[in-house]
Length: 334
Image (cartoon, rainbow, N blue to C red):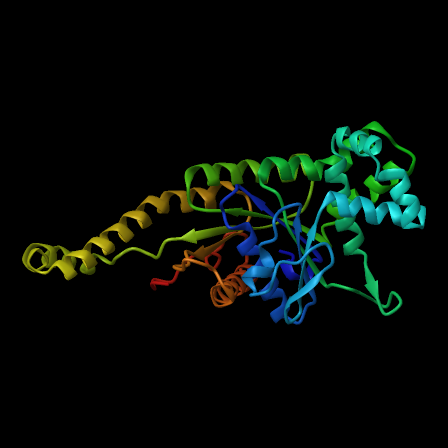
């Protein structure tokens, strides 16, 4: 299989609540640890990535958040302003043409315009160079994509435009974006999920749409927030003995045993969802642990990144997708 970090344009999407932003930050750390220059792009949302690295929220201009890593928040409004100034040459002309009530109302009514502006900015960033074009500004661009439904419609937009028009500036821009998205040497679409029924089902459906509708090369399935592995049979027997003979006289021990039982229940609830993900999603599954922290900071993201990097390396070294080595095998409490 093609190695994930050999690609320049990594998209991450999935059901809301699967930890997409956290996974993007972990991917960025893993890529930076390999010596790559990385930028993480958040699309038209309140920035979350900078805070994970202990940095005040940034804006449209990329800001450094960690050694080798920058973050940017892309909005349609800023993208339109940048594109308009590039085409019209002068900010004053752009303001006269676009920043008036009539034009704002018109552009707000055009379906797909915001998504096209976001895609155009991402395409421009992927091709951005430094040192007079001698090298790319970033080795890896990680896109913290929208949730499943919006993501599919956004990344399908270039194909929709090309079905409607075949020539002109709009078609040229759509064609260049489409070429980037469907270039398997540069782009990989990665799917985020958690071991819950709706998230796994949505990941399975998204995987099919990425192949059949978007026609984008797929990377990995990132199965996040997996509860620690269950107890061994001998441990269960010991716990049963403690419950019967000791715990009823010791409230502290009773509370501990109750917590262990709840952990075991959650793990057993997730097991069939993990298996379903392995069987149905149609791409290698990287299984990642639940992080026991009220707020995720750099220490937790670094831990997750290290686990992610180890599992990607192990998975890419396997002889076939989904072979042993991609999964959550350790029997340790995180």
